[in-house]
Length: 496
Image 1: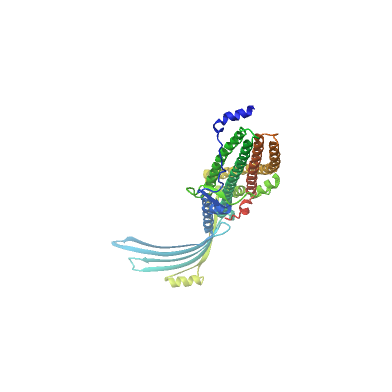
Image 2 (image 1 turned 60 degrees about the vertical axis):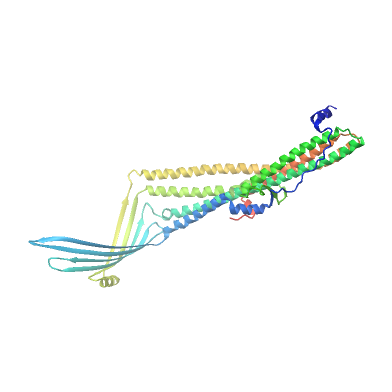
């Protein structure tokens, strides 16, 4: 009696009215657009700014690799020179001028060797002309010379690891950038997929609440008939009206959630937002096939395929190379040079060239160059900097492994819990259907009130809502597991 009076006081304004409430139209509004997940993912791959930036970074890294290989190119150099000298001489009372000129041309072809040394082939041609004023004589000397030279560092700069360090670092950097692209794509795709299933959940949530309102409308119709027949008090209508009012409010909030989830999906996927492009009607339905997961295989796979860990390892290799180069550059320089070749000299170029090709003359040479920085603060500082960078990468790797371990554990636990929640919610739904039917029969026999029937219907609604939420939570957890295991992009057919 007390409960009925309380209801009467709350809903006094509707006591004398008999409203006819229609279930809201479940069709799409003018601002609703039906989209499938595959269509949205295609847009993301093509239009995502983050992916576009990551792809540009990869192209830059590819260009840097090409640039680094330029160190192995043949280098052709050519020079030409002309020098004229004039000197005044005095002999007794006579003053004269001696003149000389030198014309020279040099062409060199060189290449860096894997040992760090340089092999070069050089051709020289020169003409020296002297004019002596006092005796009026003119002397012309042409020389042709062909030489091969090998310059080899014995300390600083020796070896392929040092001479080609830039190539190794460029390749490692390209691998790291490619892994960065993979991680960016994975995160972008994962976010969009999760947002899509959240939209699906919002629509399911709205549908369940509209179904509950439809049941309440039907309950009011039956109650109204019972009131007219005198088998139920008129206050029984108040109980239904209260439930209907609550359901209508919940439907309004559910419609708002559809809009909010749709806008978030459009934002993440880069879809158009505006009149006619607000709510998203999903073309894919929830189809969950639950399975149990264990942490150990997921974690093992996550460590093996993590693009973040892979990128850190590549950058760690570059840091190690940088330390080796810095240590090498901090040492002394000792270069050995060897040169040899034929040469010819005559009073004309043809004769000089002929004598050279006939090996009428030759030359050999050797030289040593030593260099040592006293104090070498620059080299020591570079070594310390490279060592600190490698230590930082190792710290970041430990942090990343811990983060992956936590994420994998949470994802597996969430998936297994969501799986159990679906089982329990499904059991609750099945039991609620039996309880509703039993409560209806009790109401018809006068052993239960209308409120009892409505309460059973509310329990069924809540069980359906919990099941729908558990489905999406399970999907989100499996998406996280796929992302950690390196299977997400492949499973959705995404190629970069």
